[in-house]
Length: 399
Image (cartoon, rainbow, N blue to C red):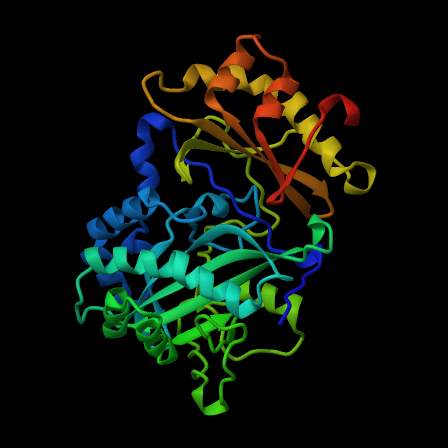
């Protein structure tokens, strides 16, 4: 089954900023128990708070085939304060159960022409969910305090025949009972894993999904197998999954994925915030250690009147490049980082946006601010992506 999605209904890729490097540990702050309404979930959040902080740090330090980033609100748009909330671990109520939920973004773009939906979900399960589950079960005890462990992971699916505008998103949701989760963490063969997966609640884009490891297509779920709809008193919402479902299918679904309701204090979709350019968050990308900045572009563009290449060039020349000298002065001199990752958020008008990423080697960035190389030299040594798709960029040709 092929997933396609038009750009008008895409959930924008979220990339996170953080705190000043001198106070980086505060980026691992955990959801406060006071933010949780369900009494059992609140008690668990309080009881295991220090373990959750440690778990968040362990996930942040782990290596995955592609970058995994914790995120509390998968439906937040770039520029919103909600997009900065990387507290993607919390106890929530789901179908009258208290579940430890881990949510985030797996930064991979699968080619939907080469991998089916089942194959994509299988890779996310094996490359992201299972390794994180093993971290969870090594740090959170198998206690009767809670009933299960759940995951919600957003990743990309691209149609290689189309332009970057047709890159869509999918959400894989998996909810395991407490005992099944611990058994799954110890399972090593596909047969063992499949047996437990078959007994668990699996969804793709909010719809029940018969995940079949190692197969092209999922198995067809019988009506009796499908999990019951959630109760109204659950403190979960299907906001991200609703938008994804509208992009894929107009028929309603009874079972939402497990995305927590944003509290009233969080901004609405129209509430934009300028993101700090001097608040880096450490991250790993393969064997590279990076500092990641998220920045709201002060330039404005009209999508119909400019190309992605011109916006990428102007965003670098007129916005990012002038900031680099000041940023370089604030970097720790004794830290061994391979590069800087800048996510520049562009407002394209009519509630449209895009993210341009510049991943710059540290030595080239320093050479640029010291006027030893040109801006084009820096671009040539860097990686530039628009909405997750890499582009080549010659600054003078598109100005």
